[in-house]
Image (cartoon, rainbow, N blue to C red; front, side):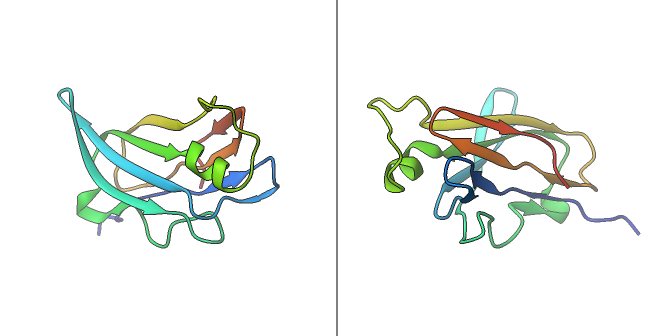
Length: 120
């Protein structure tokens, strides 16, 4: 039996030291120069989304892009954000080689920096 893979994410606001609630995230599939939106979600009170972004047979090997709407979130939470914001939309493009695995792509965010990694 083949294990069904999935893609998940979460966002932590490192300047406030808490999960980033209500941050919009878009997921795209990239193929042959085309960019196709798969879903748009918002983070919950724990900075996570309520379900995997994609899973099972819909989760395929290839290139994906997460776009985190950081600027809107930072303005809403009262961060000192200049206009234009230093960080507004944060695109993270990554490859999935083994779609039977769990890919977790978190974002650690502040108004002037971010980091990411493949989590578990």
